[in-house]
Length: 117
Image (tube, rainbow, N blue to C red):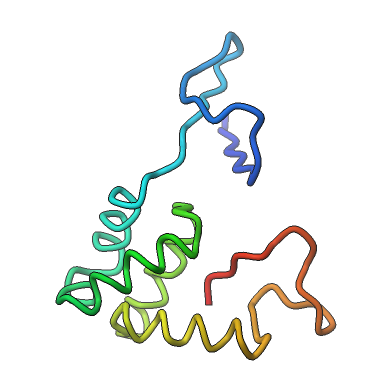
């Protein structure tokens, strides 16, 4: 027997808890929790120092503190050995140039304004 994880972008209720059928609703991460997830996932060396700490906070906020987006960003940082400040710069440049990962035929997919790289 398997498990299914559904991660909607919008929920009617943002309260954490479980309902009668066993569905578990989790609240959003706050920025401090998101930064900690990013630090642990990307490797401390990629998030250490004042400029990287500020970049981590800004990146978390830009990605909506979403764990999946943060994990993908952390994976990129770890794989490419890129510090957070540099990753944030690349992320911002890709958004300005319209080279988002969520592009299709030159247009951003509907309902997805936050991208990871």
